Amino acid sequence: MKVTLIGFMGSGKSSVGQMLARKLKHNYIEMDFLVLKESGRESITEIFEKDGEAVFRKLETDVARNLQDKDNTIIATGGGIVMNKGTLDYVKSNGTVVFLDTTFRTIEKRLEGDTTRPLFQNKEKAKELYTFRKPLYAQYADITIETNNKIVEKITDEIIHLCHPQSNRESI
Ligand code: S3P
Image (cartoon, rainbow, N blue to C red; front, side, top):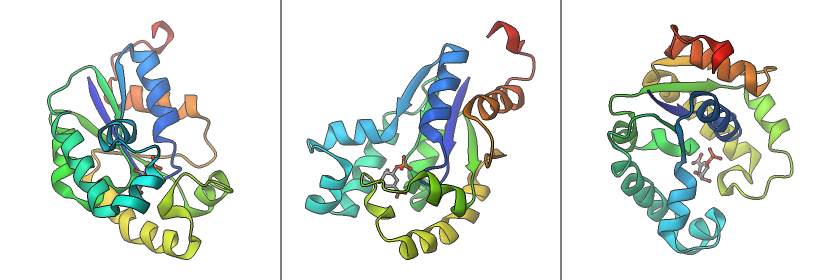
């Protein structure tokens, strides 16, 4: 199967994606990692600072284009994937899009002190971005999973159950 995880920064896409891939014995792909590799920069922050967000989004689209039609794969997207519907369409081809729905309050707590996310350095702007994007995540998702106060394993098992109901979770 193929699952594409979407959601705001700090919603748990990477942690859930890694556990999901491990349990299902699928490949795990983190889009930010591939974008960074393509950019030739040292960090996401450096891409934003030296090249700008538009270049980052362009690289994100290029990476997504190359991820089409990969099966047995779990893809953790960057939180901004919904800013470009075309980018999302590439990664969702034949797969299930799962929205990890997390409140801004929970995200704020999780990302306290984080310096790796350029779009989360100003809380007010991040909150505006969250409010703008939330309906987009919900609109593009096939499945929405509420993640507040849930451990990664519980979220992972819920996804397996919903996307793959016939699987015997004990044997995964
Ligand atoms: C971004 C989210 C980040 C990363 C970049 C931009 C965004 O990924 O792609 O900093 O626009 O929300 P995470 O969602 O994994 O933090």
